[in-house]
Length: 113
Length: 115
Image 1 (cartoon, rainbow over the protein chains, first blue to last red):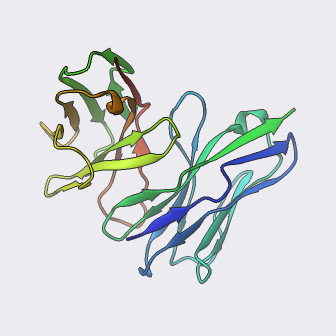
Image 2 (cartoon, rainbow over the protein chains, first blue to last red):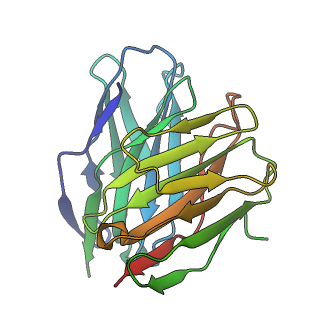
């Protein structure tokens, strides 16, 4: 079974600085998708960024980018120019070829003004 | 405009009661899900369902049952509520397959409190 591990329960970053959230996963599949979701205090789960495993190029969405290392099964999220609104719980997720989603345990990000 | 909606947002009830949470998606997706998020924020999938197959997480008690009147709705029925059922329940949907439409879209969550 696939597993997703987020080894950082909590992280903090100074406003305007850069922070990297870690995620590793375990799978025997070669084709899959990876996601980062953000959950602010409002509880809404918001898609931040996604990466297709068949693509070598790292996905980027404005201030958010990933470092996808397929061989190492690593999928970290980099947030540049951190803003107060980035404070939230961040979940890494894996989607299998069978359309099942697996989530990590989350990383709570605090942004310090 | 809301892509995935859930009602109610908050639900407070007594142990032993039976309750339902409704979920609707207007994205035309084929697959819908129910997740439970406990007090430690751990997100656990309960069910995934499309018009062909219901996949049940075997750790989910049979007091929980999904009911889908049509492709756009997947309601969650819970019988004989227990204290441990208190959590936030999220509904989500995705297109079943397809490289560009695989993203899961979540509802706002329903906070269930069992007294």
